[in-house]
Image 1 (cartoon, rainbow, N blue to C red):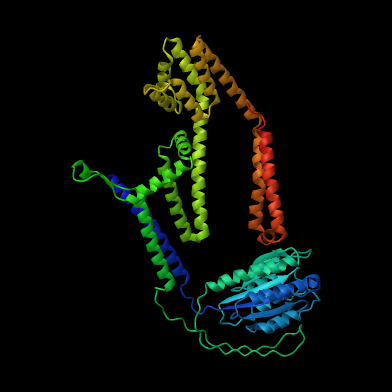
Image 2 (cartoon, helix red, strand yellow):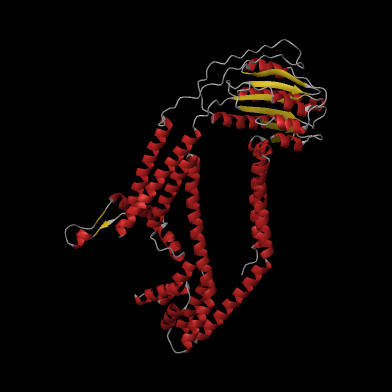
Length: 559
């Protein structure tokens, strides 16, 4: 039965390693399915109204960077709008022409916002499937012949990415009705907004598989005219490219994923066998062979961990901690199991999100185990401290009934609640094996970190040397401990508001930081470079100092 359960555990762990790569490969296979006739064109629409004069140079520089960051095979058109709409160039891959047209932009006039959206939506090549308008504006519509409903209707099937330079005349409601909006609080933030939009478009491009379309006849004629006049264009679009031919599903990337999954399967199976070794005892009972482990490597690993703990003096401390936390495992076995779980979590994270996610998951497992053990230890110690007055009352009653101190401890081991019952049962077992009662109880006081029990042991030792009524002494100690506990609970109640305030003051800045990161990522990006990093580090230092100071003030009252 034990052999079957251990083998089942190894198979389950290995199955996890096999399923995750397969799921990733299936997901990638679905994402890489060919899209028939998938193409992309981008039209860059820039507001050149009079209100854009202070920010036009920053906008032109950001637009130039945007064009340079786009793949060279993506056609980009440039249009400006003020009193009217001007088509500087239709969608083309001539980056030099686009850069020259952007550099020649000048400002003046109103803001024909709705006209540019309605017009640009009609300037794409008809056979293009993916159409994107990148719109930069700082104000609301003024002077358009089209309405907002006309612009929304004309942009059906077109993805509108608006960059709003925040100002007194900004109309976010209209921009949000047209599509997604990225806000820039000042001209310096326009570059970051363009970079974000470029990243989104590049992500869309990466999901479009490369195809070999037939030659498309496109004739573009650009006359030498002033920047504010439209360049006449003639676009002759050929038939859409034929769908790509079916290819073999076993691509090199999917093959590598399956090979990696097979490797992880084998590795996890081996780890499961090492951590859960099976013992050959049936033949040993018959006298055929000596008991042997299925894997000597597992025994050597446990032995190596045990030797390392002894060498660094951690074995006894870890054993005491596990005992107090009520975890029935040897220190070496506990470390081996935690390491195994951390390795499995790291492999899962490696498959799901890469090496960084895998490392973070492994660290998270170790930290979670550490927090759990400390919490369980503190919880049992607190419960023991609360039970100690009742335990002393039980010992006092037994002594007054004529029993000796050893029999009184035995009654505690039989009648007390956990964890006092098991701890005093351990003391009673040591006494029966010949150890002095005071030494066993003093070790219990050190293990449970109980000063009150240490006082009880001192009282018992003094009574042994000087004599006297031990029951009365223990009754007095019990009453004192009970009163100290009552006062401690009262103090804890009075300081509850301060402790809650300390937690709120510590957690609120972190929550606000996460909220700003999610709501306003462009401004948050300023904290990740240059002076922002210095400010962030300084704020972190102040947070740590403030937290320590508040904790010291709240915990200043001790008993």
